[in-house]
Length: 445
Figure (cartoon, rainbow, N blue to C red):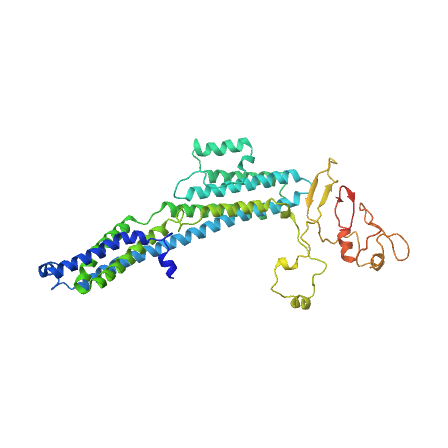
């Protein structure tokens, strides 16, 4: 608590002391003059003035107005940070949904998916930064970082430049419309294979984010009423002038007159300055919201969505517990890092499409393991399961005959031993071939 009292960064104490200290010093001077000349004490109403009652009325009025302003200021500050977090959350959710929706087209249209994703993250990064530029109070252009906006096409960049310099359009509205047009275009050409009712959720999140931005601009453009500001200024001035007079009549000692003059003037003036700092949270003061950090977090979220791991499909491992009792026994406070046994990168599977109408091939990268049950291999057939029993080499039955493999799948290597889980991974029902390790066909996944 003591450290907070002497902390100057973000404090309003210096401003309050500028008003409180002269008032306290005036009380000491006035008390000295009263002691030297009784006529001065009578001139200031020392015999007839009911000092405590007058001072209490003045202080109560000033305290009521300042407390009202402080309450409203903190409400504006809290609403501002809430709206900024909601805006970022809504816009991130919209891009995240679009990246997930485009995952279905990766196998056949990888280049178009990459173009779509990179366009979206760049437009969203610029949109979020432009929104923060609109609400900051210091009117600085280019103060936030964006994700490689130079990677956009020249026609788009020229329009974004003109909409702010010559056409005087709102850049955030232009970017929102660009993203909506981009979504509709790729939904129409089949890149986004999602039913329209589900895709409409993306438009809703984009819209809610823009509404939150409008509410932030409402806070920025609407100041505390001037009538209240003027009234508080007059009351604080009167308090600073009359408190020394009252304390010099009530208290005999100069030291206590200084203390009890400084404290009430300082506390009320400092509370008023604190309210002024909180009323406008979108600046660059130490008490304002960190807008640059908001933009940096948004950029980090967008970068996460274009990484290769974004398309990773989680699945369970061979050592997981599937029954209720064993899962209850494995309850622990361990974290993810405690269960990682190998930090090396997994090998990547390249799915090469071969079922397109034009017979062209297009590669797509996906994380290694996917668990899917395929109708090509009947895992409930004891005859098929016996051929892959532990201890038997893949590609041979216990009776010596060759197993029936699914069509378009390479036979497993002779030295590979498979269990039932590995069989599921080996015979995925996919219309593509599995290539890795420089093009050598394997099915050891």
